[in-house]
Image 1: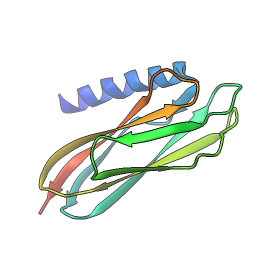
Image 2 (image 1 turned 90 degrees about the horizontal axis):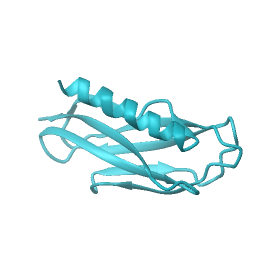
Image 3 (image 1 turned 120 degrees about the vertical axis):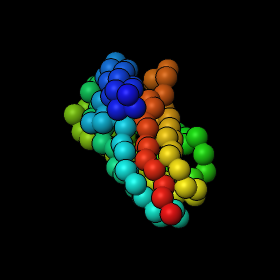
Image 4 (image 1 turned 30 degrees about the vertical axis):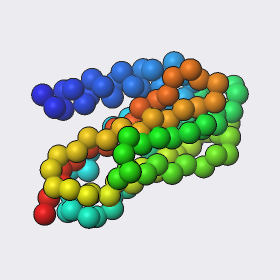
Length: 120
C-alpha cells in the first residue's frame, strides 16, 4: 500500500512539474535501510521544457535533518539541472521527508520526497 501511495504521489508531482515547464526524472527516492547517524544523499535531475531559463528561487526541507543543495545558475531550454538532497539519520525508525523546490515564474513549488528506515 505504501508503494502504491508513493507511486501515485510521484506521478501527480511529475504531472504538476510538467505543467510548470520543468520535468523531474523522478520525484521520490527510497534509501531503504540506513544506519543511524549516517549521511545519505540522492541527486534529483530535472529538464527545463520552457523557452525561458529555469532558475530555482529556493529549496526548503521540512526539517533540519534534510539539506537540499542546488546551483543557482539558469538552466536553458532542453538542458538538465540537479538538486542534491542529503539526509542525516538522527533517530531510529521510518522516515518520510519533503523538499519544496520553487522555480522563478512558477506559482507553486514542486515537492520531492525521500524516505527510508533508520536502523541501529
